[in-house]
Image 1 (cartoon, rainbow, N blue to C red):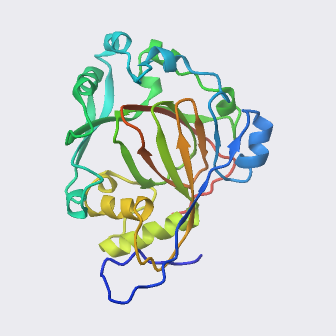
Image 2 (spheres, rainbow, N blue to C red; image 1 turned 180 degrees about the vertical axis):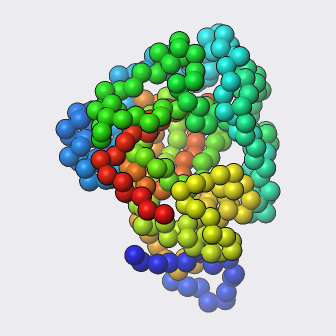
Length: 300
């Protein structure tokens, strides 16, 4: 495995020859045919995306949201206000100066859905306090909401046929999830708004993470990630490596990028590192399903 170091933070008078990081577009499949998907992506362990129309629209698309411009359908969702959901609270701007990024405050817990819905009525990009429903298990939602999110056939017919978990993400831009990897392969469907997902292969992501841990003087597990990746210096360094145009790089790597609009989907193979950002104003909503791979591709 080729090793490289994090981009240097000390300026020098001699400009080093930069080695650019390349972000290639993720290949798009034309339909949801399981055989095509298996041959071109699943068995080869590479990410692919599907454009809008490849899958039938889920009922949630037209029941949870109002279009033009996209917004939550409060008349429908308010009736489920007592439902407990996992809620992340972040204070600070992830795109401000490096020192500001290091001061991001992150908390998470459970709260009634009405708390989130009330905040979204007042939210704007300028607000310092952000709420985000992240990885809310669909199985714990009221049955009516579960029925709004049926699994596409392709998901249930992939791998061993086991779906470990299906979850939803709901928020108001800007939203951001730092670089991480998941223990299972994932199907990711954008319900509303737009997000950009950047992915790097397992060996490259492992090296980025190991170098970051060395720079921080830490030795945390790449498998079990917690609040440390959502705040402080680790969050700042992860964002700089994946999203910022760092000058004077001593290395380069090739990653992949998928821009997902409403109705578009992405397959993330097991072990692939990925980071996600919302890229348009207004609401953003996604659903993800973790599926069992045929083999285990992760080592720690």
